[in-house]
Length: 274
Ligand SMILES: C[S@@+](CC[C@H](N)C(=O)[O-])C[C@H]1O[C@@H](n2cnc3c(N)ncnc32)[C@H](O)[C@@H]1O
Image (cartoon, rainbow, N blue to C red; front, side, top):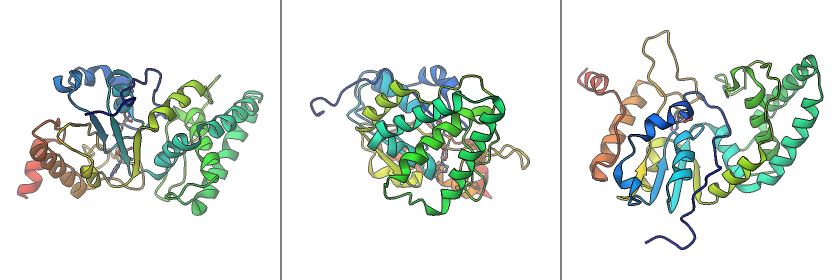
């Protein structure tokens, strides 16, 4: 039975960070495969163990009624931003408004300088941030993450192996830095969302028979030279890919086959046999 007042739709909540491997462009195609039970309202809980920018999470929250949500990722900066938007969205919006005004008033050269100054501050703060306990510095850091994501080249969030943001300046005419209405609605949705910084395999405690799990792990590189796994310092190596396949199978057994499988069967079978 669902709790009163918990079955809202979040029509305006959209991803606010562009993310490597993000599925926003493919969402309608993926959504065409959503199970009938979800459309009939029989799945009450939603879990996403590799949430990234959350294209599917926001899509289902816009279109289907769930009692509760769980989102998980191993990227500290992403989860820090999500938790801050949950906790203190208004302060983040204020800071983004200031950034938008200051940045918008500058010439291209001035914007470039501003961008690299924000990037340097972001990287300098790295050793001082505590990712597990909220403090006021999270507000500035979240504003920096959104700002860098909107103004950097290709609009992605990418860090090097030391966790430093290393994407260069992008020349956009009018980047929408503050996106106030969206952030407010996202924050509302987050009030009903558990947000965890942890390994995907730990989220099975949340998953019950009426949970829909959407599972979009980092890609396994198709060759040694094509490495698409640089989402965070915690890339999935071959063992972790095998572990993710095992995790999906475990969920399938435990939860009556309601999950959709993605790991490439032939690769998994071959690796296990090796
Ligand atoms: C393909 S992306 C997900 C993209 C997402 N579906 C979207 O629409 O933006 C994979 C995500 O898995 C995260 N990740 C990598 N290793 C992880 C792990 N061991 N546990 C949880 N998340 C992990 C990455 O940080 C990245 O955000």
